[in-house]
Length: 274
Ligand SMILES: C[S@@+](CC[C@H](N)C(=O)[O-])C[C@H]1O[C@@H](n2cnc3c(N)ncnc32)[C@H](O)[C@@H]1O
Image (cartoon, rainbow, N blue to C red; front, side, top):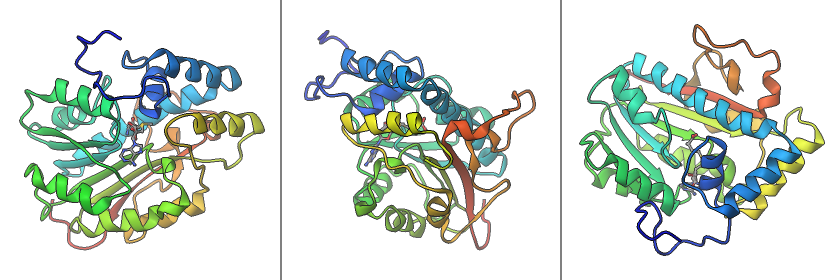
């Protein structure tokens, strides 16, 4: 392994694929290993749509961050932020509103190491290594950075991460803990894979995630809607990725269901203090 590369921490298991690095490969990134590429290629052979879903997820995330910036949001807590690629949350947010602050949180050592490298000169962005399954610890670490003012609205971003939590982790309770840490006028952004209306080959491809460090749990629209408890979904609600507020110039998607993932953004009820 080329040990001069600062995005490769010394203690990672390079023989087991990681979902962060597989995702990076699908997005055309360079922060992945042979074992990740092999799994990604195996998934692509089973269903090419999975790559489209990951790219559509990224497009949704950028669009939604632009929307949030347009709503006056200047603080972002991006959990399961992944390995930085083109068009990261801080770049979108800061382009829309200079000085916007972003805390990136991930459990993957490569994602954290590479994020730290590219963010070291940005005073408005930090990266925290924490586990979504431990929300109290995650929030303590986020607060300890001093970067965000939790008495002002914060957008909690959970893009493509909650589906790594099994039901036994009680994702609704975890999201509830995050919700209780932010003030009215804050937002929750969620994108999540679903089996709703999907053919068997897509379901089988998702089963391959069991080979990575965490398996995917597909959830129905009704299950995901419950995660917005306390939030009011903004238009158009919880919809397939490509149909969430397409921007002028976006290609119309004739078959949004094939993205096999839902996306939604909700605002926490109460006084808006943005
Ligand atoms: C598919 S990527 C999504 C990246 C980015 N949010 C996006 O939507 O483009 C999922 C990320 O969630 C991270 N992740 C998975 N389980 C996590 C956990 N329990 N706590 C924090 N991060 C987690 C993975 O390491 C990975 O980087």
